Image (cartoon, rainbow, N blue to C red; front, side, top):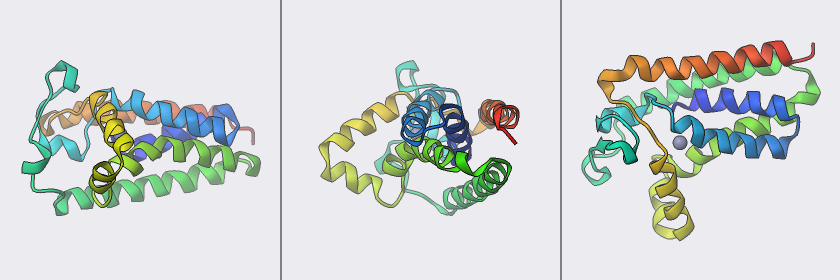
Length: 175
Ligand SMILES: [Zn+2]
Protein backbone atom coordinates (compact mmCIF):
# COMPACT_ATOMS: atom_id res chain seq x y z
CA UNK A 1 0.00 0.00 0.00
CA UNK A 2 1.11 3.56 -0.63
CA UNK A 3 3.16 5.49 1.93
CA UNK A 4 0.58 8.32 1.97
CA UNK A 5 -2.29 6.00 2.93
CA UNK A 6 -0.37 4.42 5.80
CA UNK A 7 0.80 7.83 6.99
CA UNK A 8 -2.65 9.46 7.03
CA UNK A 9 -4.44 6.50 8.63
CA UNK A 10 -1.64 6.24 11.23
CA UNK A 11 -2.01 9.94 11.99
CA UNK A 12 -5.76 9.54 12.54
CA UNK A 13 -5.11 6.63 14.91
CA UNK A 14 -2.57 8.75 16.82
CA UNK A 15 -5.22 11.46 17.11
CA UNK A 16 -7.80 8.99 18.36
CA UNK A 17 -5.54 7.37 20.97
CA UNK A 18 -3.90 10.65 22.08
CA UNK A 19 -0.79 8.82 23.22
CA UNK A 20 2.41 8.39 21.19
CA UNK A 21 3.19 4.79 22.22
CA UNK A 22 -0.38 3.57 21.86
CA UNK A 23 -0.60 5.52 18.61
CA UNK A 24 2.55 3.81 17.39
CA UNK A 25 1.15 0.36 18.22
CA UNK A 26 -2.23 1.18 16.71
CA UNK A 27 -0.57 2.57 13.60
CA UNK A 28 1.61 -0.52 13.29
CA UNK A 29 -1.42 -2.80 13.55
CA UNK A 30 -3.37 -0.69 11.05
CA UNK A 31 -0.54 -1.19 8.54
CA UNK A 32 -1.20 -4.91 8.25
CA UNK A 33 -4.98 -4.50 8.16
CA UNK A 34 -4.64 -1.92 5.37
CA UNK A 35 -2.16 -4.12 3.47
CA UNK A 36 -4.85 -6.82 3.55
CA UNK A 37 -7.19 -4.57 1.53
CA UNK A 38 -6.96 -4.69 -2.28
CA UNK A 39 -4.58 -1.88 -3.16
CA UNK A 40 -2.34 -0.45 -5.84
CA UNK A 41 1.35 0.24 -5.23
CA UNK A 42 4.74 -0.35 -6.86
CA UNK A 43 4.20 -4.08 -6.36
CA UNK A 44 1.28 -3.92 -8.81
CA UNK A 45 3.73 -3.73 -11.69
CA UNK A 46 5.14 -7.07 -10.57
CA UNK A 47 1.78 -8.72 -9.86
CA UNK A 48 0.38 -11.10 -12.47
CA UNK A 49 -2.71 -12.22 -10.57
CA UNK A 50 -4.42 -10.03 -8.00
CA UNK A 51 -5.20 -11.18 -4.46
CA UNK A 52 -3.42 -12.02 -1.22
CA UNK A 53 -1.01 -14.99 -1.32
CA UNK A 54 -3.64 -17.24 0.35
CA UNK A 55 -6.05 -16.29 -2.46
CA UNK A 56 -3.73 -17.32 -5.24
CA UNK A 57 -1.81 -14.12 -5.86
CA UNK A 58 0.85 -14.53 -8.52
CA UNK A 59 3.92 -12.30 -8.63
CA UNK A 60 7.04 -12.11 -10.70
CA UNK A 61 9.64 -13.58 -8.29
CA UNK A 62 11.85 -10.95 -6.66
CA UNK A 63 15.01 -12.50 -8.10
CA UNK A 64 13.57 -12.08 -11.61
CA UNK A 65 11.99 -8.64 -11.54
CA UNK A 66 15.26 -6.77 -11.93
CA UNK A 67 14.79 -4.65 -8.81
CA UNK A 68 13.44 -1.14 -8.55
CA UNK A 69 13.45 0.89 -11.74
CA UNK A 70 13.08 4.64 -12.26
CA UNK A 71 9.28 4.41 -12.40
CA UNK A 72 9.14 2.86 -8.93
CA UNK A 73 11.46 5.53 -7.50
CA UNK A 74 9.41 8.31 -9.12
CA UNK A 75 6.28 6.84 -7.58
CA UNK A 76 7.97 6.75 -4.18
CA UNK A 77 9.06 10.39 -4.42
CA UNK A 78 5.56 11.46 -5.52
CA UNK A 79 4.15 9.42 -2.64
CA UNK A 80 6.52 11.11 -0.15
CA UNK A 81 5.65 14.51 -1.56
CA UNK A 82 1.91 13.83 -1.12
CA UNK A 83 2.33 12.61 2.44
CA UNK A 84 4.53 15.63 3.17
CA UNK A 85 1.70 17.96 2.07
CA UNK A 86 -0.79 15.94 4.12
CA UNK A 87 1.45 16.11 7.21
CA UNK A 88 1.91 19.87 6.95
CA UNK A 89 -1.85 20.36 6.54
CA UNK A 90 -2.81 18.01 9.40
CA UNK A 91 -0.21 19.35 11.83
CA UNK A 92 -1.09 22.93 10.97
CA UNK A 93 -4.72 22.14 11.70
CA UNK A 94 -4.01 20.34 15.00
CA UNK A 95 -3.25 21.82 18.43
CA UNK A 96 0.35 21.49 19.60
CA UNK A 97 -0.37 18.89 22.28
CA UNK A 98 -1.58 16.51 19.56
CA UNK A 99 1.60 16.67 17.53
CA UNK A 100 3.54 13.94 19.35
CA UNK A 101 0.64 11.40 19.34
CA UNK A 102 0.01 12.21 15.66
CA UNK A 103 3.68 11.61 14.85
CA UNK A 104 3.66 8.37 16.90
CA UNK A 105 0.67 7.06 14.96
CA UNK A 106 2.19 8.02 11.61
CA UNK A 107 5.54 6.43 12.48
CA UNK A 108 3.81 3.21 13.60
CA UNK A 109 1.80 3.13 10.39
CA UNK A 110 4.94 3.53 8.29
CA UNK A 111 7.35 1.38 10.29
CA UNK A 112 6.56 -2.02 8.65
CA UNK A 113 7.45 -0.60 5.23
CA UNK A 114 10.46 1.33 6.55
CA UNK A 115 11.84 -1.95 7.87
CA UNK A 116 10.60 -4.39 5.27
CA UNK A 117 9.78 -2.62 1.99
CA UNK A 118 12.81 -0.41 1.48
CA UNK A 119 14.57 -1.00 -1.82
CA UNK A 120 17.81 0.01 -0.09
CA UNK A 121 18.14 -2.09 3.05
CA UNK A 122 15.24 -4.56 3.46
CA UNK A 123 16.85 -7.39 1.51
CA UNK A 124 20.04 -7.06 3.53
CA UNK A 125 18.15 -6.98 6.83
CA UNK A 126 16.29 -10.16 5.91
CA UNK A 127 19.51 -11.91 5.03
CA UNK A 128 21.18 -10.89 8.30
CA UNK A 129 18.39 -11.05 10.88
CA UNK A 130 16.22 -14.16 11.10
CA UNK A 131 13.33 -12.50 12.91
CA UNK A 132 13.08 -9.90 10.13
CA UNK A 133 13.02 -12.68 7.53
CA UNK A 134 10.12 -14.24 9.47
CA UNK A 135 8.42 -10.86 9.75
CA UNK A 136 8.76 -10.44 5.99
CA UNK A 137 6.81 -13.65 5.47
CA UNK A 138 4.05 -12.38 7.73
CA UNK A 139 4.04 -8.95 6.03
CA UNK A 140 3.83 -10.53 2.58
CA UNK A 141 1.16 -13.04 3.54
CA UNK A 142 -1.41 -10.41 4.55
CA UNK A 143 -0.85 -8.34 1.46
CA UNK A 144 -3.43 -7.94 -1.28
CA UNK A 145 -1.86 -6.21 -4.25
CA UNK A 146 -3.94 -5.61 -7.37
CA UNK A 147 -2.44 -5.82 -10.84
CA UNK A 148 -1.50 -2.73 -12.83
CA UNK A 149 -4.68 -3.15 -14.91
CA UNK A 150 -6.82 -3.01 -11.78
CA UNK A 151 -5.14 0.21 -10.67
CA UNK A 152 -8.41 2.16 -10.53
CA UNK A 153 -10.03 0.17 -7.78
CA UNK A 154 -6.69 -0.35 -6.07
CA UNK A 155 -6.50 3.45 -5.77
CA UNK A 156 -10.20 3.81 -4.85
CA UNK A 157 -9.84 1.66 -1.71
CA UNK A 158 -6.98 3.88 -0.55
CA UNK A 159 -8.83 7.11 -1.33
CA UNK A 160 -11.73 5.79 0.77
CA UNK A 161 -9.60 5.14 3.89
CA UNK A 162 -7.73 8.43 3.40
CA UNK A 163 -11.03 10.30 3.20
CA UNK A 164 -12.44 8.59 6.30
CA UNK A 165 -9.24 9.40 8.22
CA UNK A 166 -9.22 13.05 7.13
CA UNK A 167 -12.91 13.49 7.98
CA UNK A 168 -12.26 11.89 11.37
CA UNK A 169 -9.33 14.22 12.05
CA UNK A 170 -11.30 17.26 10.90
CA UNK A 171 -14.34 16.45 13.05
CA UNK A 172 -12.45 15.19 16.07
CA UNK A 173 -9.62 17.63 16.42
CA UNK A 174 -10.31 20.38 18.97
CA UNK A 175 -9.56 23.81 17.55
ZN1 LIG B 1 3.27 -2.99 4.02
